[in-house]
Image (cartoon, rainbow, N blue to C red; front, side, top):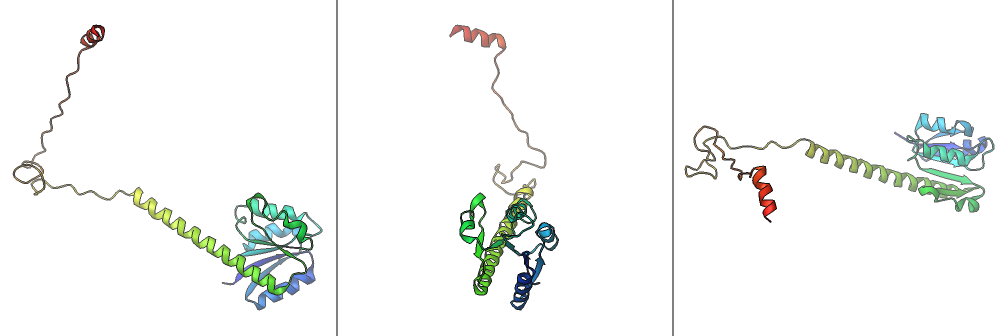
Length: 196
């Protein structure tokens, strides 16, 4: 299965060239030139990575980014912001606990491909670690959920016990002496308390 990359940019010429280039490098591009549809397109295709233009005209692209991270099914998809105002955007790069990768337009193809590769590798490592952690939790849960059967000695088997070597004498249930200390009556307790 090919790695899917969603390209969100209102410049149709740029998205066409970029999608053709991504196909040549083994990726499967999904193009969305209308930012109003970017979230729905991402929900439909669940891409492995999203390239998002930051200066699109129809909708505040910062809002699209916020919507991507607010959606539970999309929040862990890595996003690379492509912008002509990279210097201004760099100040917002790591706000809200979200690590944002920003590339300045016009972006060099070599830099874009390297960044895509590293973001996909990092996300793949994160997902593999999350799967391992999840598998460990399931395994731990299974160990504690089902208590292993405890084998009790059968009557008459030789284990530590009485002189005959068995845990219990004979084939009957052993008599257990539950001797509790005698409790003083309430009157005696009251008298002891007064005597002190």
